[in-house]
Each structure stands twice: as C-alpha cells, then as structure tokens.
Image (cartoon, rainbow, N blue to C red; front, side, top):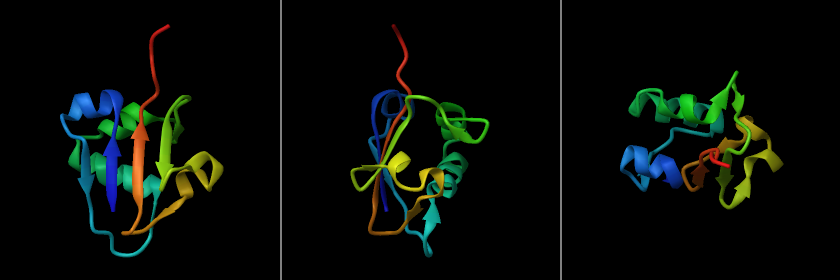
Length: 91
C-alpha cells in the first residue's frame, strides 16, 4: 500500500510517500495509527479532532474521497493508494 503526502505534511516530514505491506484489510483509522507509530503521533495531531477528521482534511483512497465511502472506517488493502492533504490554513 502506498501513502502519498502533500502540502504541509510533505514539508513537515520531508517525505513524499511511504509504502507499507498490510496483513489483511485495515481501516483508514488503523492506517493513521500505523503512521502515528512511525511519525510520533503527527497524523493524529494534524488530521483529527476528537477522533474525527478535522474540517478541510482530504484523504483519498484510489482517488475517491473517504468521506464519500465509509469515512475513517473505509477499508484499505495492499493494492490501494492513499493520498493525504492536511487542512489548509490562512485567510
């Protein structure tokens, strides 16, 4: 499974993407926990508030927004690609 990073995530982590081999299906919520183990809880702080996606966060699974699937419960498999855009700031 490939996870691509954009915007501030890419800048903060100094990485474009990571690859993981999953043992079976995992939810997007579980993938965020996996990323947090590697990146010191970065994704929980950046993307979530009270266990839900922060407004403006975009997570795509194979090009489809998870909000139009099963949200954080959307299942991911090894063949899949996740793209993560953090909430934007400014004004």
